[in-house]
Amino acid sequence: MRPIRRCLALACVLALGTLRAGSADADGMVSIPAGTYAPLLRDRNDPPTVDVAAFHLDVRPVTNAEFLAFVTANPGWRRSHVSPLFADAGYLGDWAGDLDPGPGAPAAAPVVRVSWFAARAYAAWRGRRLPTTAEWERAAAAGYTTDDGATEPAYRDAMLAWFARPTPSPLPAAGATRPNRLGVRDLAVLVWEWTSDFNTALVTGESRSDTGLDRNLFCGAGAAGARDLTNYPAFMRAGFRSSLRASYVVPNLGFRCAR
Amino acid sequence: MKTQALLLALASLRLAAPALSAASGHACCDAAPAAAAPLSDRSLYQLDAIWTDDTGAAVKLAELRGRPVVLAMFFASCTYACPILVHDLQAIRDALPAETRARTKFVLVSFDSDRDTAAALHAYRGKLQLDAGWTLLRGADADIQELAMLLGVKYRRDANGDFSHSNLVTILNAQGEIALQREGLRGETGPAVRAIALAAP
Image (cartoon, rainbow over all chains, first blue to last red; front, side, top):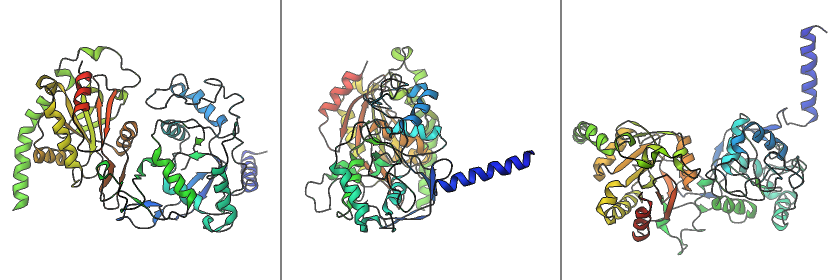
């Protein structure tokens, strides 16, 4: 075959492959169109909705196999080498060795027990980044069939059921759950996930009338209050994020990338 | 009229700046006997980020090595808690024995990469009458985020460019490791003073 025909043939094969995979591109990401996000926690001076520009999001969380490729190429992030500043003890604790996930961490399962620093370094290595909280929540707000998953019993119940289950060990494969309307899988039903700005959740109490509020702890016009307590999964996620520190590793906390 | 007065004040501060930067003591000019040993993996002085102080000089945190450091993050336009935070730090400083006080560095790092230029920080130094024992730093957003993440400082930029942030005071030992952290304002100075005394080599 002449070079140009070979190129065309290759392009056709790639395009078909992409179509077969649904709306995910060859890199395992989907395009999320511009939209808005109504933050659960916001300062009273902030507007009720936030614009989220269009971006790309991984269809599923990063797997053990993918993270293995990262630590293979980046020895400083291996379990026995990592600085305690950047990851607590317990980093990749379910792996059998530095370069061996082992039976406790199946290749296709989401990588967990990784700190924010490690997740960020992985994303940078892939030429990506961590999603912001707004981006992640915007993607998770879409249901299976509508733009508002909170109004779809099946979508909401899947998230609620996740809270009710103990974490399976080992974790199941990533990317196996039903995609939502935007083509994203595993949102809030598999693992908690890091965001780039998780440390913006300044949770002090649910309202300004909270007499337990210690205003000396936070500088600001009044730390953010919760807007809507009926969205239990979102509230749980906000509470969880506010409890994190960047070096923490948690048995069911992983991440996915954005671009 | 007000602008002229401000410019005059800034001009006089800039004239004083060379004296201030010499007195603020970069590591080259101070005896730092521990500097030869390698840093531990818990030391914040491993970080490569290049900050700028209020004279415009480039500063790495590693230059603080060899003395106790009391560090907090702030922004100069803050009218709510940051002035109290600085006052709180001054109370700690005043409670130190004279010899320890002379060796301890008080470091304020700004969240506000947009508005807290070197000149703005220098004006802040003048406004709060912070002497050479204080270092004021500004830097890039990614470095601010990295430092805040390592310290455990929560912060967010509001719609109007101000910052909501936790009020965390961190004491670093001479090797740049976190010796003590204290959340909140107007606490007792005792634990902090003791930690600094222990941190002094």
